Image 1 (cartoon, helix red, strand yellow):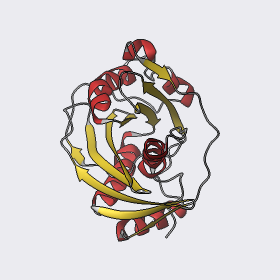
Image 2: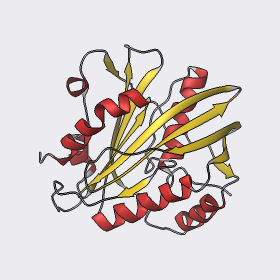
Image 3: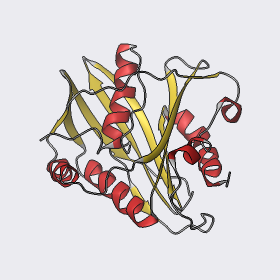
Image 4: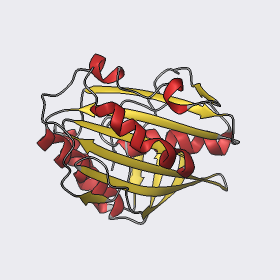
Length: 233
């Protein structure tokens, strides 16, 4: 069963982050609606305004920057997009998801912006942010479907190009932000080395904010990212 990288945000984004941590190679968050597994914690929020979907250009103005993060952060230069095939085994829910995505489902959000940073205050620490915009219904259903599928399989295997990776997922509570939120820890094991990545996704109106990276950095900046994504500019 093959998952196109334009379908599964976490697989594409987080596997790249994890491999970078294991091999010390360069990486960049890729375009897909980033994410792998996440905990759907659907709750009503009061702060997110109802609005039309934003363009990619508008989203890019709402990304975090070095001024928002503080000292010790450096923006990672963009690298050429990776086009490795991603194959998943051991997770029937992802097999079904792949079929729906390949048939043209609503899992790919073309309006998006992204950025990633390294943090010199900690060895191999990094954090990446991705913003997506669409109607509230499409975002809720699309992101929720992906995260439900991912968390339905506590352990599965991913083959990225020729690199085999074992992925373990753990649902964790998400801080109360926005209208809907999802959160989990993913442990990627490749070549005998493991890397733990936290991912928090928050929908606020017609924007989804995804923060991925080390747990400490994600916890430190998720609320700030959501607040900036909500601001009209």
